[in-house]
Image 1 (cartoon, helix red, strand yellow):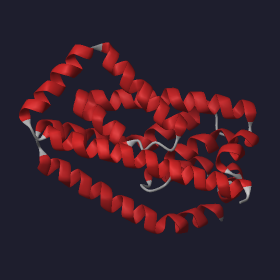
Image 2 (image 1 turned 90 degrees about the vertical axis):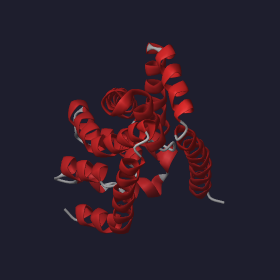
Image 3 (image 1 turned 30 degrees about the horizontal axis):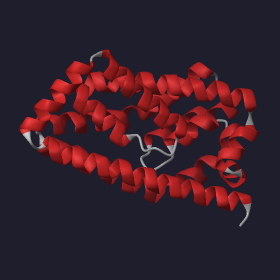
Length: 226
């Protein structure tokens, strides 16, 4: 097996494994939240943690973005359940900014070889148009907004473009906002027992995700031609 194919298989297996574990944890967590007694115990536990809980959640968010294969939705949902929609969102945003800065500085230091090592030459070639596009900022921002596209992968591509650290970090954060807000809102709704709101947000997110996956190749081709 070629080195690039082996890397791809390893990446996919790791992604499926980690996603499965997190999805299983999230499923049991949401199920337990339906019990008012468990929900109260969870609230008391978060209160007892104090600033430690905030720092742990912040560290998880940073790790999730840096590692890239870990899905962000469940982490953001837990943030919403633990700290509410807006406080949870702020923690996630700060973590996003911190992780983006770390990756940006690292990739700018080591360049293309580092990204190519982790993701493979074929992936780099597919997205190489972002480095030369006249509308790089617009393209990356729209790709961040579209569900189903690898948002954490773009964090590694951004430093290879001509965008500044401030410009790219701003794009990354604002592009992620809708997804992060919907996830923290779902977590908060589950914590409050508002399952109608939870299912409504989930349904909208799921439909958006399906549409994003359906049309992402067309969008990629459209921007690659600019």
